[in-house]
Length: 128
Image (tube, rainbow, N blue to C red; front, side):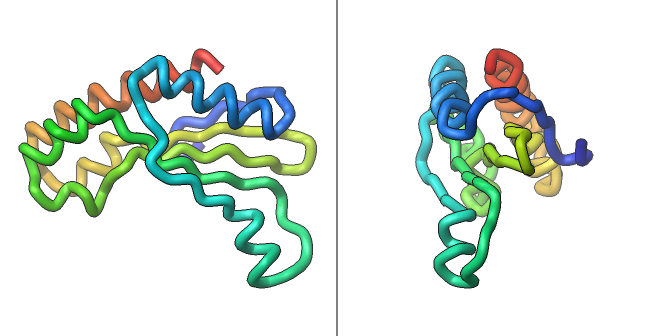
């Protein structure tokens, strides 16, 4: 595990893992603002094979509002990123640590928001 993320092997087929991730994020009041199918983009642009890899941009509106109030340009660091990827036969889910991402701003109020977001993302990850 990288020092900027939390990861879990979910032991599910890729498509089912994606749905479970979305459900668990919704329970923590995160909506999906963006989906980037990196595998499809790589296949289309570069050809060849590429394991399933989906990037989800997750946003909790209440936390985003507080983050924006604390730091106007926080949008450069949002939304929270969640990835679902297949590595051979293994499907993993990883979430970026908001405390690591937002910590670069050096804003104490923003760090309080990041800590709450991180707690919620960890709960979502654990519930998959």
